[in-house]
Length: 287
Image (cartoon, rainbow, N blue to C red; front, side):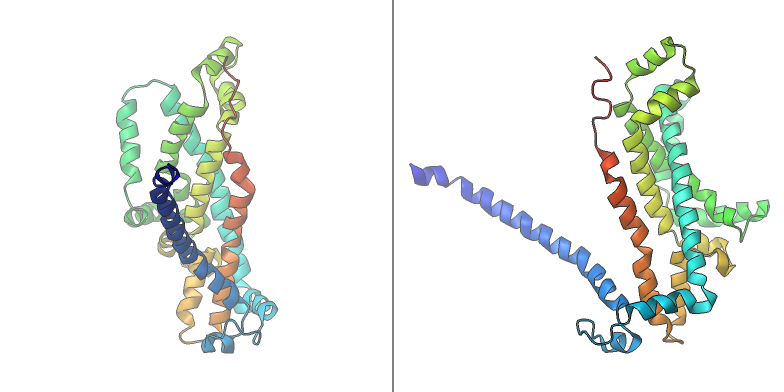
């Protein structure tokens, strides 16, 4: 009886073990490059060329940091500030616009609404690299090429963020709450700003993080739009240094150290904002 009772558990135990093994492989695949980057950022140039990362000799993290921020007249610090402006400010404004558009698509009725939303969904499938040349031509006509706005303005519009905004508006903002606010005399803008936007907090943070990651890692658009090095984001600046490293080996340590620092804002953003993803913010709002 006991043997018969234990028999069905074996496939389940085997499946759990298999799943854990697969997950462990993917975790190692994800973390090993990060571990290599952390170790490599602490080594000097000679240790890097010897691939001697596990040895305690050649520790030079502090010197690498000094060289990083002193290289080419301190360009890396300028690139870092540029990336923060492009990514943080662009993601914040873009998330507000995307969620507002998604809210409008879900809560209002207007002509050709579903057809326009179909265009939004179609825009999601268009690769950003395809849009780089048309955006460059438009920026050239407007006289914005090689300016901050040439990179900042295009990243404000995110079709996928609009799609997510509509999904979150449908799930987090009950129509009954909006009707109650209108009955109390609130206008549409007041209802959205004081009632709906608070309920859309998790959606706003989600869109912000998606957009922050996309803008921070944005490479092709700045490469097309910018020729002034002082306007480069970190991604494009490190690419330029990495290309120069084949001729000037002193760039290798600073490129690796700069790459390590470049992932810090994304990690901090996900760690600090993950608590806002919790659901249930509207629980009890409707009885």
